[in-house]
Image 1 (spheres, rainbow, N blue to C red):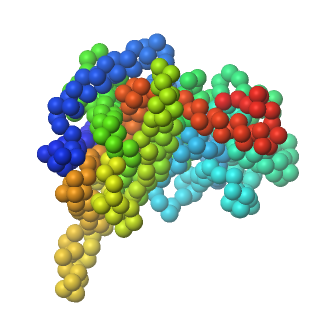
Image 2 (image 1 turned 180 degrees about the vertical axis):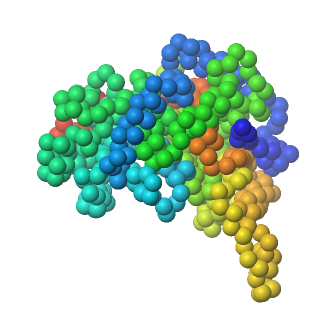
Length: 447
């Protein structure tokens, strides 16, 4: 099956002039990136970087399917309680792969509550028939303060409404060995799924964190993981021999972003031309920011490194952010994501008005691509670098490949920048202060 492809001509000098990269410097960095890829392969062989092996978890997929089969006989609403990496991947999958404006017909309705906004949270709970609702509580540590607060409220309402039957309505997804949520689930008899050791939240979308709600909603997770398997082969993370830079989309993306950063383009804009991919862009922003925004290098040197991710969606943000990208500072590199085949083919009808006749015979998909292409050309003429990732279609297979590619790209970028792309000390500091303000002993906080 055809995989995604990358067109990076407008990252080069031939495309954008003096602000572009030279093929020679890209090839030089490519040789260094090959060494980074070899390091990643070695780490994988030693059992590190376990997110790379998530597409191959057959036993876990079987367990998720068994849970889904049992739930379908009585569940109308499935609610994910989580935040950050426990929520963004779920939202990305559902927005990308489930039909907009249609839910709850053949499959349970999915709600991902990644906020503690009291009005939103209380409003959702009051709208649900708790007898036909399941809550999936997701927290690797089991101590994520927002998720714990959500859970305590939900548990109390379930107890009040359903009495001793309430444990049936809770599924936990947490650490496989320890943690407060793990212990509570054992004690109270909740169904449990586990996040593999060493898989951080922002790398967990292809684990039970994302797969359970995906399956319940009707997404084919075999195809989703199949796309990731094919992308694993394409990115050569498990292969003995490297492919040329331009044939490895993860390595190419890491190199383009790294060189852009070194040229002073410290802002990376991800701009999908598809409303369905907007949440994928939000998910990417967390992946990129938490992985690469670091105070210290792996050698302990203070570097305050990190490209700032910005989300835009086309063509909407042509009418808001594009002015800044065209004429503002030369501090951005733009990644377009284009869908080559949309599910719906909506034709623009003939118009008797002369002013509108140029649209006749076109489709909304054609108009979307014309707007993206026109924006790309305008940026190139203004000397603004960009590149385009072409996704053949919005299928589980291709979305799985895209998500996996971004994760490998981020891991390789971390090596190029010389930082640890798998920790988040800045986030942990904020958690510690939050818990202290709430009266919890800071020394007892778990990561």
